[in-house]
Amino acid sequence: MTLTLTDVTLTYPDGDTRLTALDHVTLDVAPGEFAAVVGPSGSGKSTLLAVAATLLTPDSGTVAIAGRDTSGLSRGERAHLRRDRVGIVFQQANLIPALTAAEQLEAVGHLRGDRPRAGRERARALLDAVGLDAAKQRRRPHQLSGGERQRVNIARALFAEPAVLLVDEPTSALDHDRGARVVALLAEVTARHGTATVMVTHDTALLGRADRVLTMADGRLTAA
Ligand code: ADP
Image 1 (cartoon, protein in one colour):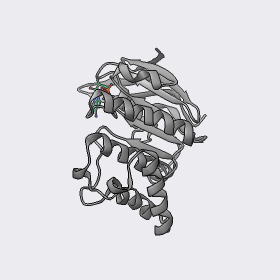
Image 2: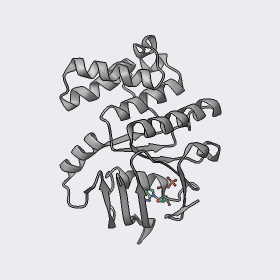
Image 3: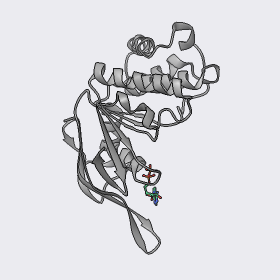
Image 4: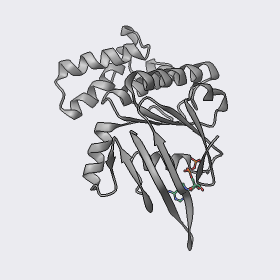
């Protein structure tokens, strides 16, 4: 399994007590598997992604990424693991305004110390794969539609060939057709790249693409 959460509990301070956001959550996502998580607002979905991304540390239980238990890792080691193994797609694309679509990806390669030419070729191939043509690859974020920006976001998350892809409400800024295309793209890249993908959504119309649908309610995760 590429992403494994075992008996994870996470609480937040809440006045004099603690609020249980994740309550003994266990989840295994295999390479090439596309899992969707649905559930009402406040049920713990974003917290689940943050824990899977090692951005939050659980009170108890373990998170393993690509076979590596993250419990004993330092902050720096976790940051490295995230950079090398985890792709994160947030609701808003968070692209850098001054960079073209291609440069958004090349910047990741630069941070990793890749050779510039290899980074450029890889950026082009990934942007081609998400359906952004050569002219659009040279545009800056404000010159792209919301759906196109989300495609750049996904391509950027895939740049490091992550073992795990974590996606939070990827369609919230998009109309239904564009949202459906983005989810189809996620399903396709999950299968093609063999990532373990977890997508949080409240949009039940998009779940047909998922291999597995899980429901979050009051911090508990169950098969839908
Ligand atoms: P969802 O993504 O399903 O809307 P969240 O994971 O954001 O749910 O939140 C789960 C619960 O934890 C909610 O009750 C929320 O109010 C609470 N919560 C989320 N983040 C914090 C925080 N930083 N501090 C305190 N409580 C939080």
